[in-house]
Image (cartoon, rainbow, N blue to C red; front, side):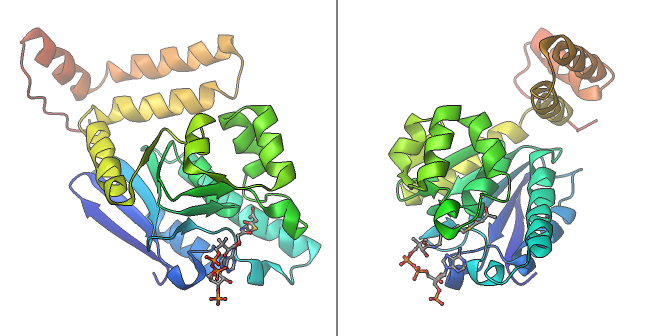
Length: 258
Ligand code: CAA
C-alpha cells in the first residue's frame, strides 16, 4: 500500500493515512489502500483499531479536490459511493475503531472520523465540512452522520456556513470525547484501545452491533436486538471466564475470543 500503513501492537491495529504532501487528502488510490488495510486486519488477533493521519498537521484534509474537480455527475455519484462504502465498512467493522485526529479533519476527513466509533483529538485539530464553499455537498456521509452525532441544529450550522471549528469547540459540542496535546494523543489512543482489548472481545463486538443496529430502529425492535446479542454471549467461553473470575475473586482473566 502506497498511501496507508498498517501496524499491529499487541492486540491493537493502527491504520495511518500516509499522504503528507497533500495533508493526507483522500484520492481514489488512498481510498483503495484504506480498504486494503481493512482487508488485512486479522480479526482473530486484533481487538481494536486506531485510525490516524501521518505528520503533525493533518488527520485528513478532505477528499482530493484536484481529483474531484473534473468529475461528471455520474462520476461524482460513483466517487461518493466509493467513499461511503468504505466508511460504512469502518462504521460496521466488527471491532471498535478509535479516530485519533491529529490535525485537520475537514470534509472527507471529518466524515472519516465520524465513521469511527470514538473520536479523540490533539489540541491543534480543526474540524469542518467546507464543501458548500466548493460548490458541493458533503459526500462521504457528512450530511447524515454529523446530524446524528452532534445536535441537528449545530450540524446544519457547520454544514451551511462551512465554518471550521477548533478542538475545544469540537469537545464542547460532543464531536470528540477528549482533547490531548499532540504528544499525548497516540499514547491516549493506545491506552484506550488496550482497555477495550482487555475485555471479552465477543461481548465488545456485540455491544458495537447492538448500539449501531439499535439506533436504526424503534425501541421495541432495539431491545430485541439487545436481547439476542446478550443471549449469544452465554454460549461463549469468555462469559464463563468473566463471571468465573468474579465469583472466584480472581483479577486475571483469560479471554480467548471464543
Ligand atoms: N485535496 C487536495 N489537495 C489538498 C487538499 C485536498 N482536500 N487539502 C490540502 N491539499 C494539498 C494542497 O493543495 C497543498 O498541495 P501543494 O503543496 O501541492 O500546493 C498541500 O496539500 C498543503 O496544503 P496547503 O498549502 O493548502 O496548507 P495550508 O496549511 O496552507 O492549509 C488547509 C491547510 C486549510 C487544510 C488547506 O489545505 C485546505 O483548505 N484544504 C482543503 C480542505 C477542504 O476543503 N476539504 C474538503 C474537501 S471536499 C470533500 O471532502 C468532499 C467530501 O465530503 C467527500
